[in-house]
Structures are given as C-alpha cells and as structure tokens.
Image 1: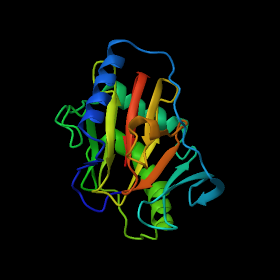
Image 2: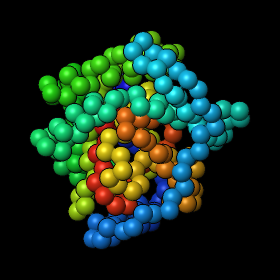
Image 3: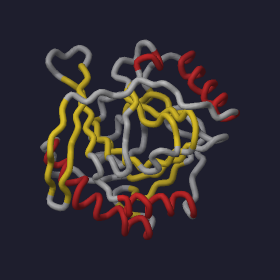
Image 4: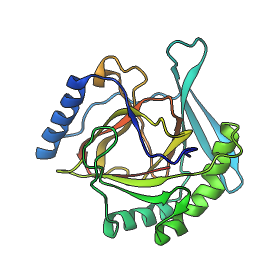
Length: 243
C-alpha cells in the first residue's frame, strides 16, 4: 500500500562482494536445479484470530529489534489464507499463460525485472486481473492495513506480479521499500519452488542472517518500509504478487 507512486526500492548495504555472491550463486542454481535447501525459517512470536468485514482467519506476527531504538520492533504479519484457492488459481492462470513480463532494469540490482504492473498510480491496467484483485484489495487488504497501522487514508498505489524462472531471475537482493508506507506479498504457486521471500533484519552476516517466510496458498505477508527483505529461489519456478 504505497503512499507515493514512485516504484523505487532501496538496496541494503551488504557490500559489493555479497551482491556478487548472491548473483553468482543464483546463476549456478539456474544451471542446475539443486535439491531442497536447508534454510532458516522466520519464527512467529504470536498468533491471533482476526475478523474483517469479508474475511475471518489467523494473523501471525514476527518481531525484530530496530537498531538504535530501544523497545521498538520492526514487525512482519502473515494473514493465513486471505485469498481463496480459486482467486489464487485465477491470478496464476493469467500470470503463467497470457501475461507479458517487462525486462527493464530493476532499481535494486539493475538486472532484468521480469515483472508486470497490474495497478499503477492507483489505477487497474489489466481487466482480467482487476476482477480478481479488486475484492481482495477493497474488502480485505485495505481494511486490514488502515486499521493495523492507523492509516485511514492508505491506498493501494501499485500492484505488480514477478516471476522467478530458471535462466531468468533467481535472486532479488536485500532491500528496503523506501517508497511505500507498507508492502504486502501474496503466496501463489506454493510447493513449486524452494526458497522464496526472506527477511534480513541484520544486514551484517549476509545470507546467514536471512529468515525465510513460509507462505501457504493465499497467505499474505505484510510489513512496513523499515524491514529489509529480499527473494532467493533455490529451485523451481516462483510467481508472486506484490501490493
């Protein structure tokens, strides 16, 4: 849910060597699909039942210390099964069968994005996906964000779909979404890839400090602009939609 329409992400200073290592290992994974990787999983400190006007489910919460500020945490929330299996299937059908992906340079690593905007400056630009996404956005996502962050004027500025395929993109380096009030990521083709979205609250230590976020079909991860995160796909094909 962006409050500014500029789609720019800010890379986290991990050092040039770390970024080169990420891409080098990503290229190795493109050349040969590896077996399931052992990764650190994000641990959730609490879970609660939540009810929105058109949805009822579970909200998990993870907390991470905020450097330089005592008793303040950066938080990650996951809403379990916010989108239905039918909605996810409809999004995937368009993404996999008919969507044309852009290959312009990414703002984080200057490599081809393999992404497609379906909402720009608050306007839907893809009719088939609008029919699926509008109820998710207006009846579930926006009511949640406005209440959670006490932001009654929050709007969805941009929505994009990204793909991570062999011989294309396998890594999206650690970065901050400095242009957005908050970011939401919806789990789509779960079980078809290893790896995925991770958070990295501590930029020191490179990949050793990454915590991968397990998202089931239709699960929505929500965080604000101060939480470093990225994507690493070890094998398989991953599609994601980002609000």
